[in-house]
Length: 485
Image (cartoon, rainbow, N blue to C red; front, side, top):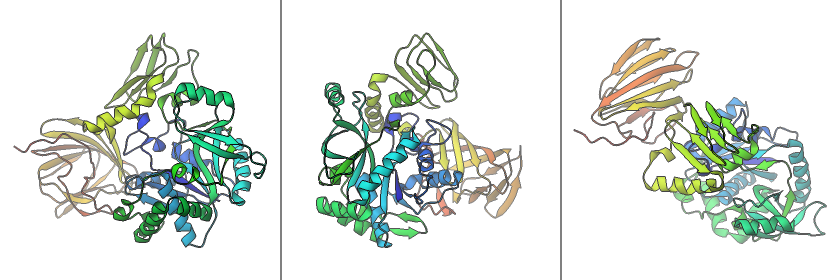
């Protein structure tokens, strides 16, 4: 059995903590490890092979770093230039394996779900395996225990031809209003659609070819034209752009006669919105969930998430407050599904807060935008031991580097030299330069940029050990364009 981990989502309903360039699956929202890492840890039992991971190309280094932190390897990482939903993602994973002469069972799991009862998960998986080995396409259904309007539902019916405990899919139902959801729960015939599947690779591709040949044919051609670099598969952008955007549910499961449900009562949550985060956390005696430097007075059933600043609330009921360095979101718990609509509005306004946090992660480390003015910008840069930025040049800005801790190896035109704590250097406009950390501890520096134009498109890259050929700056931050004077 091979897990296929789908980690390409943006998690916009958990804004402002989850953002496009660092979405919820890579955040530690429910424990010490991130949701992506928890998904991988859940699969550490006999019979489970190394996973195939499907992610956005922009998240490649985040995925590799979080895998490395767990000392885990993958069979492959499929790098999507953009999302085309779950059907194409799984199709290319299945096609890759079939091309290698392998036709194992594929356990398809989103990377951003919580499952609290590991033993119950394994029991459901054992039952699903029996059905999948007989050619069925298994969907894990979560018993609907409350009228949840944020989930899709599955109506089921009995089928004597299925193994005991497995139920036939009768109908898929889109996210209902509260009245219909209450009726579904009362009937006992409905399950929440978990988005988790088990089927044989060849069975999925056979059904996909039958029911959505456009996706099948386009994925086949896309994989053929994609660049294979070790375990990484860089999906061909031009061909993939022609692929229909469709989910496994719509493309296959709603159309096949082989769809069935295995009940999963294992404390599942897709932690898809802030009320779900409140659900899965321990509460204080007033029903509040708090994180960070938070003081709560006379408030009940609230979620208060601080991220540095002191956050104090008084007299609130069923309210969500999420504070980050550059944005604060306040909503009633009944309205948290609308955060996605808010994010879309912010995108239409061109707000950079939907894309990146102030602290942005790069393969060499991270940077944090500390301050910004008309002709200057200040950043805190952290470089991992042994890592280096690209060899680059700026046409309109100069930079001052001050070492806070660690050792910096600086390249500036034809000079290469070392700086240690409290030492500094100046990088003139148009100088070819590079920052590297030759030491064993993280390098921390303060960078002060000054010039007539501070836009991040002012970069010319000459060398990059991470194979990046895009035009984005090493320490890319979305800043207001400053007119040249």
